[in-house]
Image 1: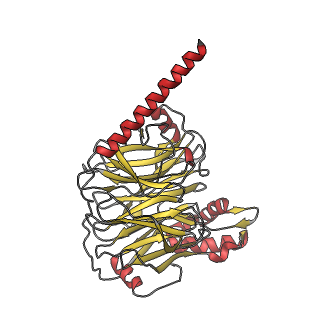
Image 2 (image 1 turned 30 degrees about the vertical axis):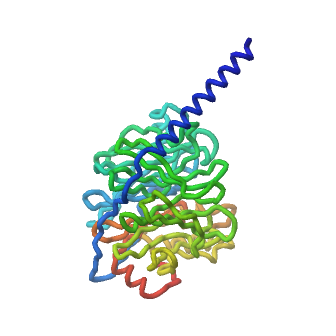
Image 3 (image 1 turned 180 degrees about the vertical axis):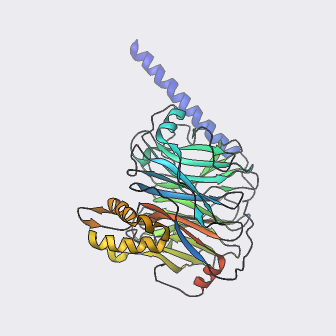
Amino acid sequence: MMSGKLTAHRSLMLMIILIAFVGAFYKAAHFPAPSSFQKSAIPVVSSAAPRIESHFASSKLFTQVHASSAIELQDGRIRAFWFSGSREGAKDVAIHSAVFDPSKAQWGTEEVVMTRERTQSALHRYVAKLGNPVVGRAADGTLRMYYVTVSLGGWAGSSITTMSSGDEGATWSEPRRLVTSPFINISTLVKGAPYLYRDGTMGLPVYHEFISKFAEILRIDENGAVLDKQRLAAGGQGTLQPVVLIEDAQKARVLMRYAGAEPHRVVTATTNDAGRHWTAPEKTAMGNPDAAVTGVVLPDGRILAALNDLEQGREALSLMISADGGNTWREIQRLEDHLTAKIPFDEEHFIGNTQTLLLQRDSSVKQHLADYVESAKRTECSKGQCSYEFSYPYLIQTRNGDFHLVYTWNRTFVEHLWFNQAWLDQRAQKPSHDALH
């Protein structure tokens, strides 16, 4: 008798799962596809003088930071986000933010946007860790944040949590879980910048790591619900963290982190019909040591990208440009270069070198230089040996044509580079392998 009840219960559960799957498939298959991308109108700017500045967006010491992103606010300021805590995946990791004022060339106070405990309370479920915040602007002007939360296991067990802000990030709505699967709704992570379609829906590049690694795109309606999703690559191809680069209303290129077999290269795919169909993914000539990549399409059609153009390690960070739609690339500036540190530096060498690097990057740290160096040493040194990491770049171009690049600087600070079109054009005229100073 008991066995019959269990069998009936299992059959009912299977039927519910099947109905959910069919319903989700029907919705994805029958919801109208968007007709075109919405591309921001950024003028071709001819500046009088090349300019580049370097600052640290984060200011908290003796902590680890990672996975920064940025967005332009309505008043022209830049708001950046990142996660910060004692280490990646720790229970004290929180989402932090700060605002950069170009008129003052200065970052404001670092503040906590969301914690693990507050996320857990809002979702009514256990949250072990969080990370990877990205923010996009919805068609109605509100900001939408998407970040990763994990309840069980590692990052492969992630789901996406979302919040919205109607006051440019000063305050946020209660977090809620984004439903991306009719089943257990896990193994969806986010890293790339959201973008818009002409119909007002939002595209959100995401990726999966559970069992099989692959990239896909979610389309989200004006209420923040997932309408449909589309794979950019088959499972097992090792494509992660897609970045969608919109060329015009119909054309776009996606660049993807690669976690597959050698050779280790950035992977790309293209569309000519606003994302209804994508070409099969293929490797580019750019190296990729299983690390994030970023990029933007310039008003004149060139593509600018920032990445670790290496097959192993994250000791160097490069700015690359393509003048033929992404078919070929060349380095125009080595932003960071510590390839000689592949054999770990001893602490004495690391301390001296880090002092120099800190002052080159942001002279305002001089007053507390010893604390900044000690903070970096705690993160990058172990048992007297030290290393370097420059990773997870995130690039935007603002309405006035300027560029803002944020990235992880030795897991200790969020580095911010601010440069104009004139500086970019100057660098594009002559190749360089020298690190930025």
